[in-house]
Amino acid sequence: MSKLHQLISPTLSSFLMITGVTLMAVALPIYLENLGYSKIMIGAIAASYCAGMAYGSFKIEPIVTSVGHIRSFCAFISIMVVSVLAPVIFDNFFSWFIFRFFSGLALGGLYVVLESWFLSIGDKKNSGLYLSIYMAALGLGSSLAPFFMNIHSVGAYTIFIITAIFLSASSATLSLKRGPVPEIGEHSVMTISDLFKISKIGVIGCIISGFMISSMQSLLPLILTHQQFSTAEISITLAALIFGNFCFQYPVGYISDKYDRRNVMQVMCLIGIIAYLCAILFYTQFSILYLLCIFIIGGCVFSLYPIAISFTCDQIEQKDIMKAIQGLLLVYGAGSVLGPLAISFALKFFGSVSLFLINGSFLGLLMFYIIRSKMLGKKNIEPVHTHNIMPTATSIIPELNDTEEVL
Image (cartoon, rainbow, N blue to C red; front, side, top):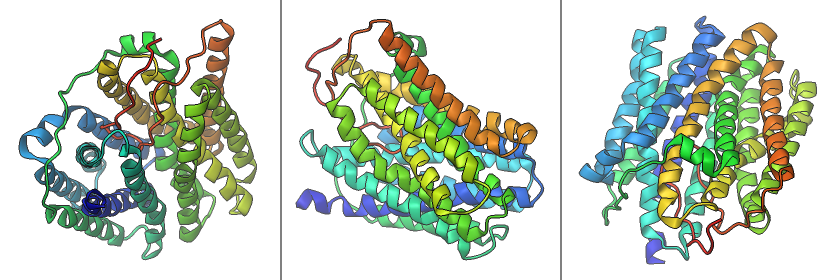
């Protein structure tokens, strides 16, 4: 119970932080379009944000270990608040592009601080419980954030002020916490070619997952705006997308521990393809069927990333797990950068339906590759690590169980 008490401050900070971050992410594309920015420019700004997050999660660990977690958290929050408010003053493409990169970089650092904090409190027997609390805080904050778009017009500065309030509150909550400072292991990484030799499915799954998640989060609000959805309807739709992630993660993770992870990924791809095809039929108007499609898409797309990482870790030695994870995060970041850029070009030439068609096609390619690899006679790889739920695009991954067998 005493250890659970230590989770109150970081859990509250996680909730407040992700609420502000998600609110900014879903409102900014609509705000920029109201100012006359093209879809390609908005996609480039979203890609800059994803690139900053990938770089921050990959390179910023030495700062955390040198100055401590609480100071690092406050510093990263300060950078993010500046990155939220400063471009509103200059209000041009170049300023948004640069400041969104630094906002993403700060977010990568915040994930380092928060995840390592939760991991330091628990051990192998209860780390899953503690991380589920962390995941619940992130999921709740992400689901509630879109509803704050209804407080004022999305085109007004109120959204940025509300975002800054949430971010500042998260810093105040954690800065008052006193306790042991977690330590982060030595920074190291496998090369992408090494990872590809170890697990082609894992690498491909990570890059496709990053592509789909970033494109859905950054460009779906624009599509809904073009379909004359109200601000309230946009909020509900985005909440359904993120809530699908929250609801799917745990049962999908449990099933992937019991069966071949490739089979689970294959089924998730199939369900996602069907949901994307149905969304094409219903996306022109707000309805229960459309929300159900978006909910299922969110669950399938967000669940692929942790399964892909777990599948890769099943095939390597325990000492190499952290190296592999760092490389997979870099691959995921690359997909996150490519997603908004590629889809924004497609939206310009082929219309709103291209978001669903392209993402559904990538799911089909991944499913085809999984089937092909199984038909080539590869041995089934039994799960030797327990599946761990983790927030998307974070940089410190939960401890995995000791390897019983290396295949």
